[in-house]
Image 1 (tube, rainbow, N blue to C red):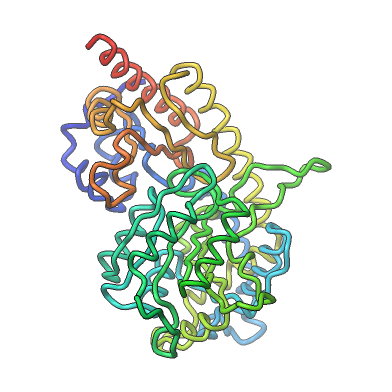
Image 2: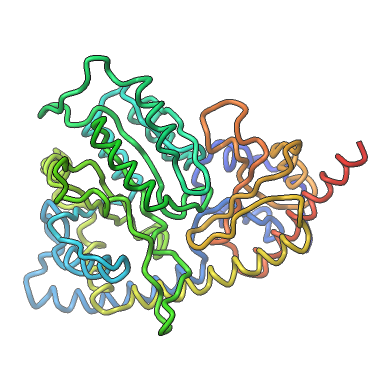
Length: 441
């Protein structure tokens, strides 16, 4: 495959270093397919085409029904969101997670990023603390720091996710000496932002034991836990007795049990249709306790505009009712499973014993540990100049200077297969080149 010297690209700094969400199609207008963007956490073009077909069917069906019933979907929506979507979302979540979900706990949003901002702005003030994994999704940190103006305190993760003992040490460092008492004005002392399932960027899942410990700490120290559950439905496991997708890993909210004697309602599940359908839909949901939903549901935004994204929500509700979303999700999971298997073969063939990585069982990303002496920025420069491959350096996923400099994140979700696999081969060649150079030195 032809490659291009990316050091000459005028848009590269804004596109990658500054993390701006430009259309990759715009980027390719001048650079062509020789650039392989393993940076992008988007669905593939084919998958988006499939969603377009799904939405067309849903639109035709729902609009025909609306014309017979008063076209209510075109008016201001209810505070909690489109009724059909909430009913069908309950069925969808219960099917895929294997336990009952109640519609009273669901509020439709304009996507997970918007919901994160809204939760932060509604429950906290500038200067309040957010505990977050290291590494974690850099745009979420930007929303928290730059938009809500809260302070980020990182907590390390290992193979089982965020480390509870370290989390408690960080909490105790900042917790008020005279304690904290929830009030109507301030229900929670601080926020914990966590991606417990197929984490971005590491693809790790928080173990059941860790989930229980995190919920315990949230109750003990009055934390609002925003559980980013975007990637949970995107899993490869199949049940043994049939060809159906196995259950998705239980969400953190499952462990915040209303029957517990010390229950308050500390965990909110934040999710959207962006990853397993299409990001342009801009529809998501939060599943939360009454103490949270009551405050969100009475916000001035909803008071003015009604339920979020009323029209598109109605169409997705119909797509769920028709069974089109489940069918699409299974195809997506099959596709990503096969992609990961091929990438694993490429990496093991070319870089066995040089890099370390965990094979993802879900999500969009692969987190690769380079040799300790190999700085990701040097690899990035080589890949730009010689190999035509883009990836995210590990230090983007932390606010701590000098951390994660020998890690990279690649996405297997966006590029079509041939382009993706060629990009991974070129990346492997670049890593091998630097590794051999270091041996000579």
